[in-house]
Amino acid sequence: MSAATDDEGRDAAAGWAGFYDWLAPEYDGWAVRVGWSANLAAAALLAPLGLAPRRVLDLGAGTGQTARMLGASYPAADLTLVDVSPAMIEEARRAFPSAEHVVADAADFLRDAPGEWDLIVVVGVLELVPDMFEVLERAATRLAPGGHLLASHEPILPGPTVQAHEVSVVRGGHRVQRFERAEVARRAATYGLRQVATGDVVAFHREGDGSDAVDELVVWTRDA
Image 1 (tube, rainbow, N blue to C red):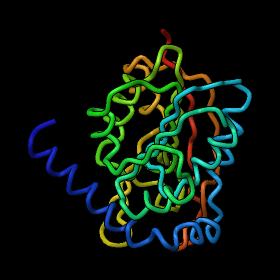
Image 2: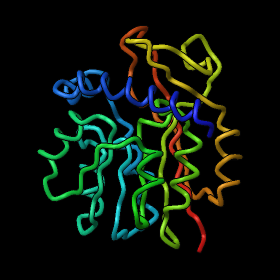
Image 3: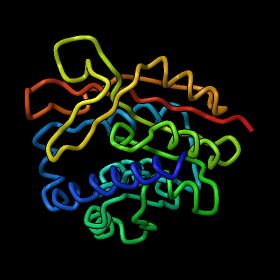
């Protein structure tokens, strides 16, 4: 990435951080109100794989909602929770005091932090980051041999809702970016990722127009 692009990425991440700092005290209530269900779908997608990860990384961990699912599914695993919002991480710290908590942009964390993970999970965040493919590519390089990456994204879908558009702008001028499913699959393959499971879920109901936000969830592995 160029220096200019790096600066733009940091600005975008900082903008979302401020938004989620503001939302953090009410986030769990908001999730109930809009019917957030991506974590349940993620658990159902992972369950048949019979994984037993020792180290699990949750990128875009928020208040710890995905971590609750991960802790229930893999109680023996060591959890690392990463989020760009300090206030969201504080909420997660109260819920999961035994986990490691890091305030960082997802791509920066993957670039700078040492180690590998048996399972990396990125739920409800890829459409918000400055460059979702940078996150996927860096996550692929941080998988332990035989490890798995689960990610959700909001694909472009035909129809009358905002999901028909590559980019939409939400409250505060923040950008939501979408890609075709085929493009995500193509890029993932170039990173050495092999798809092992996929499924769609109505992740939540948009408050603005009442439309369904449909996520594609994908599990990849990177063969040793």
